[in-house]
Length: 146
Image (cartoon, rainbow, N blue to C red; front, side):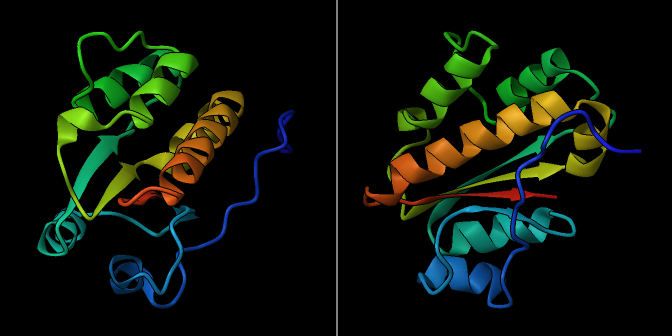
């Protein structure tokens, strides 16, 4: 079955993987990966990065996606649960504090992408814009879609 939405082509996390991200040999970006787990958060913490996981298990709609973003990212109360508010939140991570970098990970991305391709494509665009915003700042942002 083909999707009525053209989903962005996203690269897989390169061979250097997480160590490369933390060392700067892999550029910040939005990457597909097999899965994320607690070890990824531990590695991020060891590199003085701040990480968060958005659990998308059984998420099939934009509303559910936004609710999971609010929970997983511990977004401020002002988060409006829409695309503009998500973009604003991802370019103001001040509530997360000072860090060497930011790592946003999803669990269950393939299921969400299949259930709501239009929302998934918009989410990728928001993530990509946020990565670009942080690329020229002292603390990069990387998003892993697993």
